Length: 271
Length: 89
Ligand SMILES: Nc1ncnc2c1ncn2[C@@H]1O[C@H](COP(=O)(O)OP(=O)(O)OP(=O)(O)O)[C@@H](O)[C@H]1O
Ligand SMILES: [Mg+2]
Image (cartoon, rainbow over all chains, first blue to last red; front, top):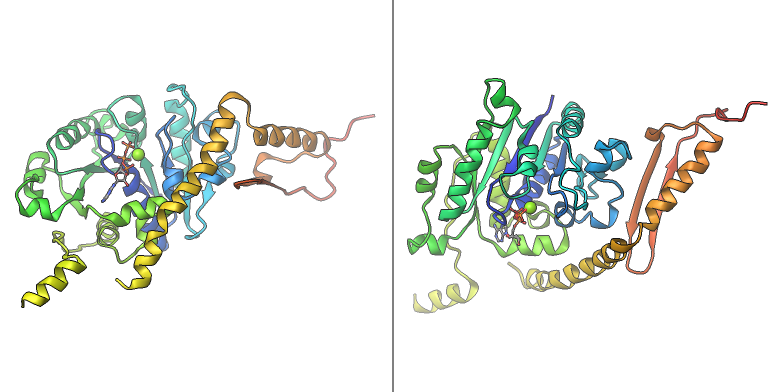
């Protein structure tokens, strides 16, 4: 039986979709069968980030409404054999997705895949609650910044009360993934420190993803950063986070400011 | 980072532009009228159902939207000896 992992945050634009794609791709590369579900009904984007936007035929709502079979709606990744995507619907009807529908789709997928990654929409409403509803684990994507941390705290509250696990008296295993970490700003003390974030949320850390141009390049070309530029700092941080998600003990390294070419040349001249 | 890398990297924005153009042309078009591909798909399926009984699982539909043309691929596994839905005389 596979694990259902929701990638959530409360606050919008913090890196949920980027993280779902990047983590999913490395997990699949290591041989795991992975399916990514886009829960952002009406505003799907995971298809774009995965580079599958031209190949969408059916979506999650089509499957829950019986228009298409699950097997017909899954899009197999062209780069990694064991990676699949279930796109969100572009409908404006927010109630198109039902809890029963999601239950049945997630139920079938968890039988067939090792990991079911659910890319949550922003907010704390219905869409976000459906995305987390059947999760075993949660990756709480947080930027080191006050409003993001506050929203993460609210999401943690929902994970502890509104999920099936919580209602059954168990709990969703929670991990904080700090993204868009800017070492230069951290060095200047302009950003909440990782310790601050963890202390406030009192939730274990899954990884620290640095701010990186590589993430933008990857989304430009429609490929998860972990596939597009595996040696990029953000990609490596995602790869480590994926290992930790699988229970491996990987030491945490705080991203440090990388000196640009110009700085290095100047530095050398001075030396 | 090699010089080649720098060169390769500069190429990502034009790729984004092209991808968006194709996607948005399609999405804008479908906002006001039903999706042609969806119509074709349904009608083709209906025709098939008239002659053979195939379960939805035996039908694989893939498509690839391009800039000027799109391809719709319908892959049907028809059971041998299978005019199951033949009209009764
Ligand atoms: N580590 C990073 N470095 C640089 N840019 C990043 C990083 N992570 C995410 N981004 C950028 O931030 C923006 C938002 O990211 P993304 O779409 O993944 O967030 P999201 O949480 O899914 O947003 P939404 O709440 O709208 O669904 C994107 O432009 C993405 O490229
Ligand atoms: Mg998103």
